[in-house]
Amino acid sequence: MQLTNTLLLLSTAASSVMGITHVVKVGLNSALTYTPNSLTAAVGDKVEFDFLNANHSVVQAPFTTPCVPSPGGFFSGFHPGGPGKAIDTFTIDIKTTDVIWFYCAQAKHCQSGMVGVINVVAGSNKTLDAFTAAAKLAPNNVVPPTGPVGGVLGQIAPAANGTGGGAATGTGGAKPTSTAPIVSNGAVGTVSASQAGGLFSLLLVAGLLL
Ligand SMILES: [Cu+2]
Image 1 (tube, helix red, strand yellow):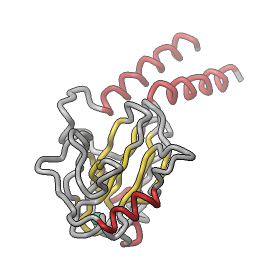
Image 2: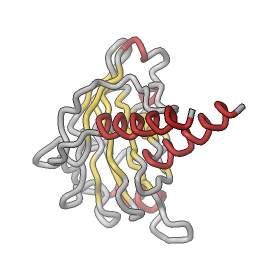
Image 3: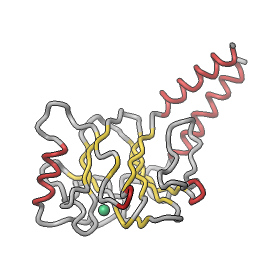
Image 4: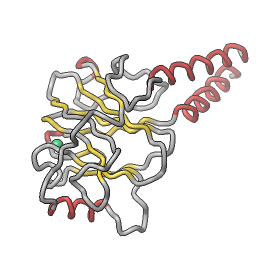
């Protein structure tokens, strides 16, 4: 009983320390979509884009220019995906509650509605529908000059890639991603390292309690 309580406390503490990782499936069922295309994430959370099919990307954009990169925004680079392949992932940290609009820079995917949003403001006229409508009219789909930038690349092994979904919910950090993030925006401390560190100290505390 006491052990159960301690473990419960521990997992609650762990999730509040590490935040939640929200997973967005890119190209699910070979569609030009992000699933979900609108999500809410708290400061300290992460959003992980899983590239399942075709050759997609994710680029941050201002609301006013849907298919043009935001200065200083993130860009995943292009990631081909398909059945039996490892799934490339691109994970961003949510550092503010500001709205984050994004699109796919491949071909005319942005114009075709391959766009999405994090933390849209309820009641605002800056809706995902409005962004999508503006994207449809955008003259160009602009690929950022450099990247990947603004996030961390990873991979989900094919073995964990049963239904093309990627098994990524926050159950304590045991996600089948590769150990070495290839790119980040200059941040040296990696996600997995800091998570592991946090978990380790929590386990240490648990050990003392028990
Ligand atoms: Cu695309």
